[in-house]
Image (cartoon, rainbow over all chains, first blue to last red; front, side, top):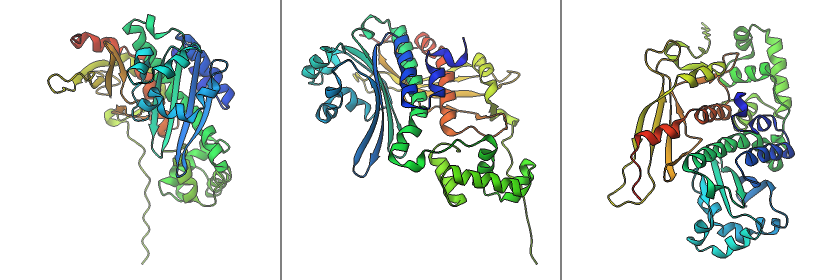
Length: 242
Length: 135
Protein backbone atom coordinates (compact mmCIF):
# COMPACT_ATOMS: atom_id res chain seq x y z
CA UNK A 1 0.00 0.00 0.00
CA UNK A 2 1.41 3.41 -0.89
CA UNK A 3 2.09 5.41 2.27
CA UNK A 4 -0.35 8.16 1.44
CA UNK A 5 -3.13 5.68 0.86
CA UNK A 6 -3.02 4.37 4.40
CA UNK A 7 -6.35 6.14 4.54
CA UNK A 8 -8.14 6.23 1.18
CA UNK A 9 -8.39 9.81 -0.03
CA UNK A 10 -5.26 11.07 1.73
CA UNK A 11 -3.33 11.16 -1.52
CA UNK A 12 -6.07 13.31 -3.06
CA UNK A 13 -6.13 15.56 0.00
CA UNK A 14 -2.39 16.10 -0.12
CA UNK A 15 -2.75 17.45 -3.66
CA UNK A 16 -6.10 19.23 -3.29
CA UNK A 17 -6.02 22.89 -4.28
CA UNK A 18 -9.74 23.70 -4.58
CA UNK A 19 -12.78 23.16 -2.41
CA UNK A 20 -14.12 20.62 -4.90
CA UNK A 21 -10.89 18.64 -4.72
CA UNK A 22 -10.90 18.72 -0.92
CA UNK A 23 -14.51 17.58 -0.94
CA UNK A 24 -13.83 14.74 -3.34
CA UNK A 25 -10.97 13.52 -1.17
CA UNK A 26 -12.96 13.67 2.07
CA UNK A 27 -15.80 11.81 0.37
CA UNK A 28 -13.45 8.95 -0.48
CA UNK A 29 -12.16 8.87 3.09
CA UNK A 30 -15.63 8.96 4.65
CA UNK A 31 -16.95 6.18 2.44
CA UNK A 32 -13.95 4.00 3.19
CA UNK A 33 -15.09 3.73 6.81
CA UNK A 34 -18.78 3.45 6.10
CA UNK A 35 -20.07 7.01 6.31
CA UNK A 36 -22.09 8.55 3.53
CA UNK A 37 -22.33 12.21 4.47
CA UNK A 38 -19.73 14.55 5.86
CA UNK A 39 -18.84 18.14 6.45
CA UNK A 40 -15.78 20.20 7.14
CA UNK A 41 -15.45 23.77 8.24
CA UNK A 42 -12.66 26.21 8.76
CA UNK A 43 -13.37 28.85 11.36
CA UNK A 44 -11.49 32.02 11.96
CA UNK A 45 -12.15 34.07 15.07
CA UNK A 46 -12.42 37.75 14.28
CA UNK A 47 -13.29 40.88 16.23
CA UNK A 48 -16.77 40.65 14.72
CA UNK A 49 -17.25 37.01 15.68
CA UNK A 50 -16.34 33.69 14.09
CA UNK A 51 -16.35 33.43 10.32
CA UNK A 52 -17.00 30.04 8.77
CA UNK A 53 -15.96 28.46 5.50
CA UNK A 54 -17.60 25.11 4.87
CA UNK A 55 -17.45 22.23 2.46
CA UNK A 56 -20.11 19.62 2.97
CA UNK A 57 -22.01 16.73 1.57
CA UNK A 58 -25.18 16.93 3.59
CA UNK A 59 -28.29 14.88 2.93
CA UNK A 60 -30.69 16.52 0.51
CA UNK A 61 -32.74 19.17 2.27
CA UNK A 62 -30.53 19.33 5.38
CA UNK A 63 -28.71 22.55 4.52
CA UNK A 64 -31.27 24.83 6.17
CA UNK A 65 -30.68 23.02 9.47
CA UNK A 66 -26.93 22.82 8.99
CA UNK A 67 -26.61 26.56 8.46
CA UNK A 68 -29.13 27.59 11.13
CA UNK A 69 -27.08 29.67 13.60
CA UNK A 70 -29.38 28.93 16.53
CA UNK A 71 -29.15 25.17 16.00
CA UNK A 72 -25.41 25.45 15.45
CA UNK A 73 -24.93 27.21 18.79
CA UNK A 74 -26.86 24.54 20.67
CA UNK A 75 -25.63 21.47 18.83
CA UNK A 76 -23.87 19.36 21.50
CA UNK A 77 -21.31 17.94 19.07
CA UNK A 78 -20.17 21.41 18.01
CA UNK A 79 -20.25 22.67 21.58
CA UNK A 80 -18.04 19.76 22.67
CA UNK A 81 -15.64 20.24 19.79
CA UNK A 82 -15.28 23.95 20.53
CA UNK A 83 -13.14 23.25 23.55
CA UNK A 84 -11.44 19.98 22.72
CA UNK A 85 -9.23 18.32 20.15
CA UNK A 86 -10.59 14.93 21.18
CA UNK A 87 -12.88 13.23 18.66
CA UNK A 88 -16.55 12.90 19.46
CA UNK A 89 -18.56 9.75 18.81
CA UNK A 90 -22.20 10.68 18.73
CA UNK A 91 -25.52 8.91 18.51
CA UNK A 92 -29.00 9.37 19.93
CA UNK A 93 -27.92 8.99 23.54
CA UNK A 94 -25.28 11.69 23.06
CA UNK A 95 -27.93 14.19 22.07
CA UNK A 96 -30.64 13.08 24.50
CA UNK A 97 -28.28 13.18 27.50
CA UNK A 98 -27.53 16.80 26.63
CA UNK A 99 -31.14 17.84 26.28
CA UNK A 100 -31.09 17.93 22.48
CA UNK A 101 -33.31 14.95 21.73
CA UNK A 102 -35.55 17.04 19.52
CA UNK A 103 -32.63 18.17 17.41
CA UNK A 104 -31.53 14.55 17.07
CA UNK A 105 -34.97 13.51 15.85
CA UNK A 106 -34.76 16.20 13.20
CA UNK A 107 -31.32 15.02 12.07
CA UNK A 108 -32.27 11.36 12.05
CA UNK A 109 -35.14 12.20 9.74
CA UNK A 110 -32.44 12.99 7.20
CA UNK A 111 -30.59 9.75 7.86
CA UNK A 112 -28.01 11.27 10.19
CA UNK A 113 -28.21 8.95 13.16
CA UNK A 114 -24.61 8.38 14.14
CA UNK A 115 -21.26 9.91 13.45
CA UNK A 116 -17.77 10.86 14.44
CA UNK A 117 -16.33 14.35 14.48
CA UNK A 118 -13.08 15.98 15.47
CA UNK A 119 -11.61 19.47 15.59
CA UNK A 120 -8.22 21.13 15.57
CA UNK A 121 -7.68 24.41 17.34
CA UNK A 122 -4.69 26.33 16.03
CA UNK A 123 -2.97 29.48 17.22
CA UNK A 124 -4.39 32.73 16.00
CA UNK A 125 -8.02 31.76 16.51
CA UNK A 126 -8.21 29.28 13.66
CA UNK A 127 -10.13 26.03 13.87
CA UNK A 128 -10.85 23.15 11.55
CA UNK A 129 -13.59 20.57 12.01
CA UNK A 130 -14.33 17.37 10.10
CA UNK A 131 -17.39 15.23 10.74
CA UNK A 132 -18.59 11.98 9.18
CA UNK A 133 -22.23 11.00 9.55
CA UNK A 134 -24.51 8.21 8.49
CA UNK A 135 -27.59 6.14 9.12
CA UNK A 136 -25.57 3.46 10.87
CA UNK A 137 -21.80 3.31 11.08
CA UNK A 138 -20.62 3.40 14.67
CA UNK A 139 -23.29 1.12 16.13
CA UNK A 140 -21.97 -1.96 14.41
CA UNK A 141 -18.33 -1.14 15.03
CA UNK A 142 -16.24 -3.18 17.40
CA UNK A 143 -13.99 -1.15 19.73
CA UNK A 144 -11.02 -1.99 17.55
CA UNK A 145 -12.78 -0.85 14.39
CA UNK A 146 -14.07 2.30 16.05
CA UNK A 147 -10.58 3.15 17.32
CA UNK A 148 -9.24 2.65 13.82
CA UNK A 149 -11.99 4.85 12.38
CA UNK A 150 -11.21 7.61 14.87
CA UNK A 151 -7.55 7.34 13.95
CA UNK A 152 -8.45 7.70 10.29
CA UNK A 153 -10.69 10.65 11.05
CA UNK A 154 -7.92 12.43 12.93
CA UNK A 155 -5.47 11.85 10.12
CA UNK A 156 -8.00 13.13 7.57
CA UNK A 157 -8.54 16.15 9.81
CA UNK A 158 -4.85 17.02 9.93
CA UNK A 159 -4.58 16.75 6.14
CA UNK A 160 -7.83 18.66 5.62
CA UNK A 161 -6.58 21.53 7.74
CA UNK A 162 -3.38 21.74 5.71
CA UNK A 163 -5.32 21.77 2.43
CA UNK A 164 -8.22 23.93 3.57
CA UNK A 165 -6.31 26.66 5.38
CA UNK A 166 -4.94 28.59 2.38
CA UNK A 167 -8.33 28.53 0.67
CA UNK A 168 -10.22 29.62 3.77
CA UNK A 169 -7.74 32.36 4.63
CA UNK A 170 -7.81 33.65 1.07
CA UNK A 171 -11.46 34.49 1.58
CA UNK A 172 -10.60 36.65 4.55
CA UNK A 173 -7.64 38.37 3.04
CA UNK A 174 -6.89 38.29 -0.66
CA UNK A 175 -3.22 38.78 0.04
CA UNK A 176 -3.11 35.38 1.76
CA UNK A 177 -3.70 33.70 -1.57
CA UNK A 178 -0.29 33.51 -3.18
CA UNK A 179 1.71 31.80 -5.86
CA UNK A 180 3.73 28.86 -4.58
CA UNK A 181 7.38 29.44 -3.80
CA UNK A 182 10.01 27.33 -5.51
CA UNK A 183 12.32 25.29 -3.27
CA UNK A 184 15.17 27.75 -3.91
CA UNK A 185 13.00 30.76 -3.11
CA UNK A 186 11.89 29.10 0.10
CA UNK A 187 15.46 28.26 0.99
CA UNK A 188 16.55 31.88 0.51
CA UNK A 189 13.60 33.02 2.62
CA UNK A 190 14.53 30.62 5.44
CA UNK A 191 18.09 31.99 5.59
CA UNK A 192 16.76 35.51 5.30
CA UNK A 193 14.51 34.80 8.29
CA UNK A 194 17.64 33.67 10.15
CA UNK A 195 19.09 37.13 9.65
CA UNK A 196 21.43 36.45 6.76
CA UNK A 197 22.15 39.06 4.13
CA UNK A 198 21.89 38.30 0.44
CA UNK A 199 25.67 38.00 0.27
CA UNK A 200 25.78 35.56 3.20
CA UNK A 201 22.93 33.51 1.71
CA UNK A 202 24.88 33.36 -1.53
CA UNK A 203 27.89 32.02 0.33
CA UNK A 204 25.79 29.39 2.07
CA UNK A 205 23.93 28.26 -1.04
CA UNK A 206 26.77 28.77 -3.54
CA UNK A 207 24.85 31.43 -5.43
CA UNK A 208 25.76 34.94 -6.45
CA UNK A 209 24.45 37.79 -4.34
CA UNK A 210 22.56 39.03 -7.39
CA UNK A 211 20.83 35.67 -7.85
CA UNK A 212 19.79 35.59 -4.19
CA UNK A 213 18.43 39.11 -4.58
CA UNK A 214 16.33 37.98 -7.52
CA UNK A 215 14.97 35.04 -5.55
CA UNK A 216 14.03 37.29 -2.65
CA UNK A 217 12.40 39.78 -5.02
CA UNK A 218 10.31 36.94 -6.40
CA UNK A 219 9.36 35.93 -2.88
CA UNK A 220 8.20 39.47 -2.15
CA UNK A 221 6.20 39.53 -5.37
CA UNK A 222 4.56 36.18 -4.75
CA UNK A 223 3.71 36.98 -1.16
CA UNK A 224 2.66 40.51 -2.11
CA UNK A 225 5.06 42.02 0.40
CA UNK A 226 7.21 45.08 0.28
CA UNK A 227 9.96 44.28 2.76
CA UNK A 228 11.91 41.24 3.84
CA UNK A 229 10.50 41.45 7.36
CA UNK A 230 6.96 41.51 6.02
CA UNK A 231 7.63 38.51 3.78
CA UNK A 232 9.15 36.54 6.66
CA UNK A 233 6.24 37.34 8.97
CA UNK A 234 3.70 36.39 6.33
CA UNK A 235 5.49 33.19 5.40
CA UNK A 236 5.53 32.11 9.04
CA UNK A 237 1.86 32.95 9.41
CA UNK A 238 0.96 30.92 6.32
CA UNK A 239 3.11 28.00 7.44
CA UNK A 240 5.49 28.30 4.48
CA UNK A 241 8.45 28.43 6.84
CA UNK A 242 8.76 27.71 10.52
CA UNK B 1 38.70 50.07 13.41
CA UNK B 2 35.85 48.21 11.80
CA UNK B 3 35.62 44.60 12.77
CA UNK B 4 33.75 42.30 10.53
CA UNK B 5 32.57 39.03 11.84
CA UNK B 6 30.66 36.57 9.81
CA UNK B 7 29.41 33.19 10.64
CA UNK B 8 27.08 30.67 9.16
CA UNK B 9 24.02 29.48 10.99
CA UNK B 10 24.94 25.88 11.66
CA UNK B 11 22.65 23.44 9.97
CA UNK B 12 21.05 20.99 12.38
CA UNK B 13 23.52 18.30 13.15
CA UNK B 14 22.83 14.67 12.47
CA UNK B 15 24.80 13.77 15.59
CA UNK B 16 22.61 12.58 18.43
CA UNK B 17 19.82 11.77 16.03
CA UNK B 18 17.99 15.09 16.37
CA UNK B 19 17.60 15.46 12.61
CA UNK B 20 15.79 12.95 10.46
CA UNK B 21 15.34 13.02 6.73
CA UNK B 22 11.71 12.64 5.66
CA UNK B 23 12.65 9.76 3.37
CA UNK B 24 13.77 7.73 6.41
CA UNK B 25 10.43 8.00 8.20
CA UNK B 26 9.14 4.62 6.94
CA UNK B 27 12.28 2.98 8.27
CA UNK B 28 11.82 4.67 11.64
CA UNK B 29 8.20 3.55 11.80
CA UNK B 30 9.26 -0.07 11.47
CA UNK B 31 11.72 0.33 14.32
CA UNK B 32 9.47 1.96 16.91
CA UNK B 33 8.25 0.07 19.96
CA UNK B 34 5.99 1.10 22.79
CA UNK B 35 8.36 2.08 25.56
CA UNK B 36 6.33 4.00 28.12
CA UNK B 37 2.71 4.34 29.08
CA UNK B 38 1.42 6.74 31.70
CA UNK B 39 -2.12 6.83 32.97
CA UNK B 40 -3.51 9.89 34.64
CA UNK B 41 -5.02 8.90 37.91
CA UNK B 42 -8.33 10.44 38.80
CA UNK B 43 -9.69 10.79 42.29
CA UNK B 44 -11.34 7.69 43.78
CA UNK B 45 -14.75 7.30 42.26
CA UNK B 46 -13.88 9.58 39.37
CA UNK B 47 -15.87 8.37 36.39
CA UNK B 48 -13.87 10.36 33.85
CA UNK B 49 -12.51 8.37 30.94
CA UNK B 50 -8.97 7.13 31.26
CA UNK B 51 -6.28 9.30 29.76
CA UNK B 52 -2.54 9.50 29.74
CA UNK B 53 0.52 9.60 27.56
CA UNK B 54 2.39 7.04 25.55
CA UNK B 55 5.88 6.98 24.09
CA UNK B 56 7.12 4.88 21.22
CA UNK B 57 10.86 4.74 20.75
CA UNK B 58 13.72 2.92 19.11
CA UNK B 59 16.05 0.86 21.27
CA UNK B 60 19.37 2.50 22.20
CA UNK B 61 21.31 -0.08 20.24
CA UNK B 62 19.41 0.49 16.99
CA UNK B 63 21.90 0.98 14.15
CA UNK B 64 20.13 3.96 12.54
CA UNK B 65 17.48 5.38 14.87
CA UNK B 66 18.89 4.87 18.35
CA UNK B 67 16.85 6.64 21.01
CA UNK B 68 14.51 8.42 18.60
CA UNK B 69 11.01 8.66 20.01
CA UNK B 70 7.50 9.97 19.56
CA UNK B 71 5.12 10.77 22.40
CA UNK B 72 1.53 11.92 22.60
CA UNK B 73 -1.40 12.11 24.95
CA UNK B 74 -4.29 9.69 24.55
CA UNK B 75 -7.80 9.44 25.88
CA UNK B 76 -10.18 6.50 26.11
CA UNK B 77 -13.18 7.77 24.18
CA UNK B 78 -15.23 4.68 25.04
CA UNK B 79 -14.22 1.32 26.55
CA UNK B 80 -11.05 0.13 24.79
CA UNK B 81 -11.37 2.84 22.15
CA UNK B 82 -8.36 5.13 22.33
CA UNK B 83 -7.75 8.32 20.38
CA UNK B 84 -4.98 10.88 20.22
CA UNK B 85 -5.89 13.62 22.65
CA UNK B 86 -4.47 16.41 20.49
CA UNK B 87 -3.02 15.75 17.01
CA UNK B 88 -1.30 19.14 17.22
CA UNK B 89 0.62 18.26 20.38
CA UNK B 90 2.72 15.29 19.32
CA UNK B 91 6.24 15.43 20.69
CA UNK B 92 9.24 14.02 18.89
CA UNK B 93 12.92 13.79 19.67
CA UNK B 94 13.81 14.65 16.09
CA UNK B 95 13.35 17.33 13.50
CA UNK B 96 12.19 16.23 10.08
CA UNK B 97 14.13 17.77 7.22
CA UNK B 98 13.62 17.73 3.48
CA UNK B 99 16.06 16.71 0.80
CA UNK B 100 17.96 19.98 1.03
CA UNK B 101 18.41 19.57 4.76
CA UNK B 102 16.03 22.34 5.78
CA UNK B 103 13.37 21.66 8.37
CA UNK B 104 9.98 21.00 6.83
CA UNK B 105 7.31 23.60 7.71
CA UNK B 106 5.63 23.15 11.06
CA UNK B 107 2.29 22.08 9.60
CA UNK B 108 3.96 19.49 7.36
CA UNK B 109 5.92 18.22 10.36
CA UNK B 110 2.64 17.63 12.18
CA UNK B 111 1.09 15.87 9.20
CA UNK B 112 4.10 13.54 8.95
CA UNK B 113 4.05 12.73 12.67
CA UNK B 114 0.33 12.02 12.56
CA UNK B 115 0.82 9.69 9.59
CA UNK B 116 3.50 7.81 11.50
CA UNK B 117 1.23 7.33 14.48
CA UNK B 118 -1.57 6.12 12.23
CA UNK B 119 0.70 3.39 10.91
CA UNK B 120 1.83 1.99 14.24
CA UNK B 121 -0.47 -0.28 16.28
CA UNK B 122 -0.40 1.91 19.36
CA UNK B 123 -4.06 1.45 20.28
CA UNK B 124 -3.76 -2.34 20.20
CA UNK B 125 -0.58 -2.18 22.26
CA UNK B 126 -2.22 0.13 24.77
CA UNK B 127 -5.02 -2.36 25.23
CA UNK B 128 -2.48 -5.04 26.14
CA UNK B 129 -0.96 -3.06 29.01
CA UNK B 130 -4.02 -1.36 30.45
CA UNK B 131 -6.41 -3.35 32.61
CA UNK B 132 -9.96 -3.52 31.24
CA UNK B 133 -11.99 -0.63 32.51
CA UNK B 134 -14.56 -1.88 34.99
CA UNK B 135 -18.13 -1.31 33.83
